[in-house]
Image 1 (spheres, helix red, strand yellow):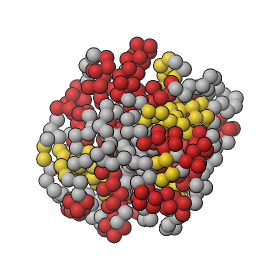
Image 2: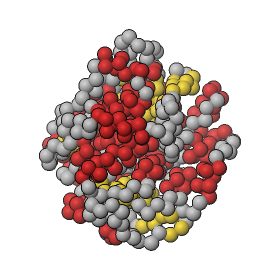
Image 3: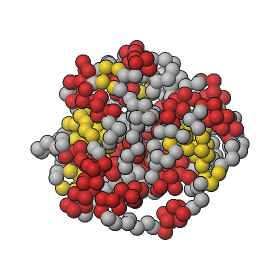
Image 4: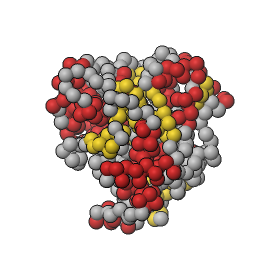
Length: 483
């Protein structure tokens, strides 16, 4: 299996090569040269597998350059910190089932891919003798999941950008309380899209990228997308009966289009998915696109701060991978669409919009703050479950797309403890924290605040980046301060 760029440049890469490169050199994203297929009889054979075993099978279709025994060892290590079931399913009434994706160390679905990514990055770097300086952006959960997966690793340093003041107190504490030498938290004066733009700007500078060994762990990294596709297979296997394919639908709270893209890939691989329902919050650029076919990202000033902050995104990086499929995998048409986006602030795919729900099974909806509060109350009253605000966005939109005899599975995004203020508003309760969580919340926080300035970020990375291929060869960067 080889990987090509959505924009057509460069030579095809292996899985580990694409993993280490992150953003392609032509500014595009890595995609499989051909999508692997899973036959119905293979799905049936997978029913008895544990989650790590299933991950080995699914990821083995993508990571063909990694020996199967090595891959099995990495998946076992990646999910060792999870409960034995790893991804539990539970009914919440109204024909909806939650897919529990927040059982990992940072209590969010990002752990599902990031724990594997930590394993495979370390493996790939050990094989090559190289180092990697990870440059990422987070709207909340990606940063903590990445840092907890990569902290203390000798060949990796992490530079994580976050929008100053835009995350929950819990999300900030999970990141900023870390004091490992290889973790660098940078709070940018702006919104998530500003952080993401800085990442793309530096990653697109090939000379700077090579000189500073830059890589990515955002969902632009294909390993994240492939690892996330595993739980779609897992959930389908537990929501259906043996004996033959039966369609289910998934609702996915989405900001950067990475999680729902993983489901789209699973569907393209042959998993019997009827609908992929994309749920947005008030920053509903993606909902507008899937309803109208016009993609019009908002400016930073137009991007709202909401009570589901991890979805406060207006420029969805992974949409490019969907557009690549939409235009028949023609990289010239992808470049044309993004050129139009740069020049006029939007591109128009309305002629293809009927294919979204038809050929691709993709539909969408929007949820507001009032919807989230009401949904949290309703789920708690009906099922005794407390769900986080992003999952509430998913539940609200899922209810609008339930079909008779088609199971509707809603992907849980995080534990409610990460968003205590919203839970208090909805239910009037203060959630209890374990002693170790309380200690984290009370710990000193280490973060560098920075303007939305590519030159300042370049200087910071050049001072603190790992150099060469020598393990543990770190330099001290710009001074952190406690906040």
